[in-house]
Image (cartoon, rainbow, N blue to C red; front, side, top):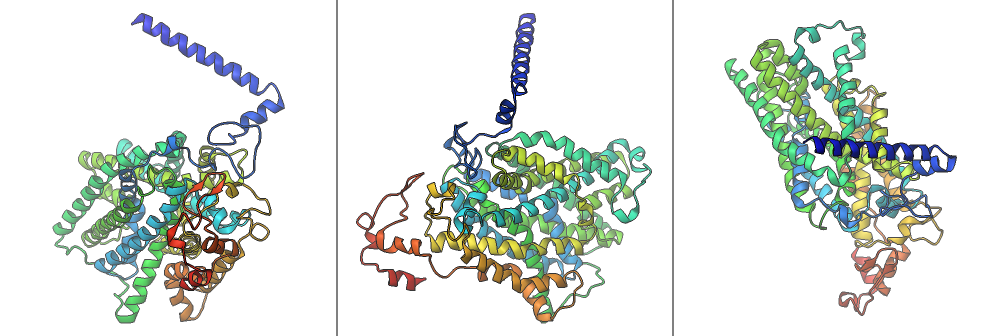
Length: 571
C-alpha cells in the first residue's frame, strides 16, 4: 500500500514537472505562445499549412469519433422532450385561451413537423460527417455561409443564457430545501422591476460555475449524458404530475379544465389561435432542426439518426407537455393560481407544504431538472454556438473553446426578462422561427432536390474563384433571394406581436410563419454546373474525399436515355 502511494506521488510529481517545463517553453517566445494558442489545422493533428476554411473541428469527422448509434439519438430526443421548456410551452398555450386537448394537439403537430425536418436534415451530416458551417458553404457559398452561421449563433447564445437562468432558479430552490428560511429570507437588494431576486441571481451564477467543467466533454463523448437523462427525468416529471393531480382531486377539481379570463375561441378564431400556437412552438423546434448536421456528423451509420429521431421526438415532447398541461390545470383549480413554470410550481409546493418530506422530494426534483437543463443547453445551444464560432475564428477557436466563450457571454446577458410571462415567452419562441424555418427549407431542398445528395468535398475548403461553391463573389444569390423574399412577408406580423398596428392579414400570415417559411424558400431550378450531372454523369454517389467523383453514365444505367430537358421538366 505504501509502495503504491509512493509510485502515485512520483508519477504526479513527474507529470507536474513536465507541465511546468511545457509552460515555460510556451512563454519563452512569441512564436511559441502563438503556436500554443492556435488550434490544430486538421482533425488528425498539426500541419505546416493553415487555411482559414479548416481546422480540427471544421474538418470531416474522423471515423474514430463516429460513436452515436440509433439508440443514442433516440435517447437524446426522448430526454429532450422531458425538459423545462417543453413542460412550460403547453401551459403557455393554455394561458392564451386554448383548452388542454387543443394545446396537446398543437404540441404534437408542431413536434411532428419538426421531427420530419430534423430527420431529413440529419441525413446530410450522417452521410458526409461535416457540421453546419461547412454545410452552409454548399448552400450559401463560401462567404455567404457566414450569414446563417451568425443567425444561428445569436439564437444559441440567447437560449444558453435563458437555460442558465432556469438552472439558477432550480439551484435557488435546492438551496431553499437545504438551508430553509436562512436562504429564503435573505434580503433582496435588487429592484423588483428587474424580475430577479438575489437568491435567483446567485443561483444563476453558481449554476454556470458548477456546470462549466462538463464543457470539456467532446461532442462524441456527450451521448452518455443523454442516456442518463432519458432514464432520470421521466419518473421525476411523472411524479410531479401525479402529485399535482392528487392536489386537484383533493379540491374536487376536474383535470384538464382551466379557469381563464380569456374565453376559448370558436370557429375560425380557434383555427387561427391553434395555428399561432403551432407556429410559436415551432420556433424552438426550428433551432434544433437547423442544428442537426452538428450531431448527425457523429453517427455510426447514415441511417442511425433517421427513424430514431422521427419517433422519439414527437412522443417525448407531447408526453411531457401533456403532463405539464394537466399539472397546471390541477394546481390552478386547487390553489387558484396558474403556475406554468416548473420552478414556480416547486416553489409553491414548498410554500404550502413545508415539511421534511416535501423538502427532500423537491431537492431531488431540482437536481433532476438541473440535469435536464444542462443537458439540453449543452446539446442544443452551447455546442452549436461552439461550432459556429469555430467557423468565424478557425485559427484560435475550436468547439470546446467556443462553448466556454458561450458560457462567459451568457453570464452578462439578462435572460430573466424573457421568462417573466407566458406571453413574452411565446413571442420569443415564435419570433425567430421566421428566420430559421427558411434555412431548414433551403438546406433540405437544395441538398435532396437540387444536388441529389452530391457534394464536392475538396471545394468545401477553398475560396478560389473556380471552386464549385464560390458562386458569385462567394455568395449563392439564389438562396439569398429565396430567404429574403420569405422573411419579408413575415416581418409585419412579427412587429405586430410587440404592439405595432398592422392589417389582420399580416397577422394571420405570421401565424403561418413556419409552414410558409419552409415552403416559400424552396428553389425551383438547378445551377448550370449542377445540370451537368444529368448529361455527363457527374456528382455520382461515389465521391472520393478531396478528389471529386467517380462514375459516369456507363456506370449508372438509370441515366441512359435521360436528357437535360426531361430531367429539368421533372422539377
